[in-house]
Image (cartoon, rainbow, N blue to C red; front, side, top):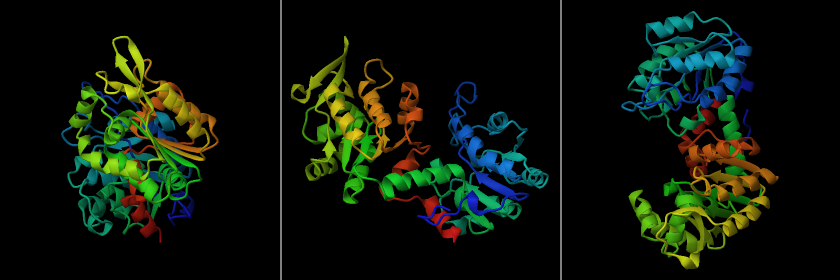
Length: 410
């Protein structure tokens, strides 16, 4: 039980001999030319936790998952995913190319204790992505066909928890037990630590290229007294500097314009004026010249070169702020970490997080990629699997699927 929210977990149900539906997030990178899986991290995360536990407890496990979106090149069958899961678990995982038809229901009926069955990509059924409340979803073909076979339904796909799709919430009103899996439980517990009840001082680090959510996060964490400081890097820093009145140069302004970020300038300007001592903007920057990395002070702006990192003086200030914190949340790298020389500030931030005694959480695809490439993935307290779900939780303090778990845990 996640006591703070009253959400039931696998600790609250008996699963031995029961048929257990498990909604996981197996959505993985796919080679657009060959259709082969490029990475099995998400399959491994669920396989080594929730699914393994259910197998060991002798449940009959039925996996529901999605891969890609209709019309995209990664919209493929889950057959490969089942094969990867077989290797991860060391058992023969069954697969059926059906979601809720006769083939699928017969395969479920024939499952033995400790066996695992992966159903076909749930998004191959057009009704899956409809957003509605659980009571509406109950009437769908998917729930009507599969619910009679499930004693327990486990929601483990945190990365999709901001989407109340049929397979995420539709079984809640009709199964005996609707509970959070281990991945979902771990994510919720970590988010409670950084969002609902953070130890102070609390520092949020906002960087990367997805600056569209930054204003909302800043507004929320200061208005609700969650964070003491927000450190900015990446395109987020460029946007905030521009909003504060700095001319960052035509090249850099064009990037913000192309991404549609200039519409956020007025809101961010207001935030900077209101929380000027709490929002830390770079005091120096690193630009990409013909010779590589070159450091410039804000007084040297505008620049004709692209800004690819925050400067070394700023990185030092950020390092000290992180080191003195008790809670740190990072979403987005400080610069173009993929390019030699421009990983500097991102490394310093990770270094501070790994040296601090704070509870540290990182999330978002680029942040995780940076932590992995630079060797810090195992040196943070929690790596969040959610992108959009993480951002929505940080802004709203809850997610649609969490609300359904709370309601039906009662």
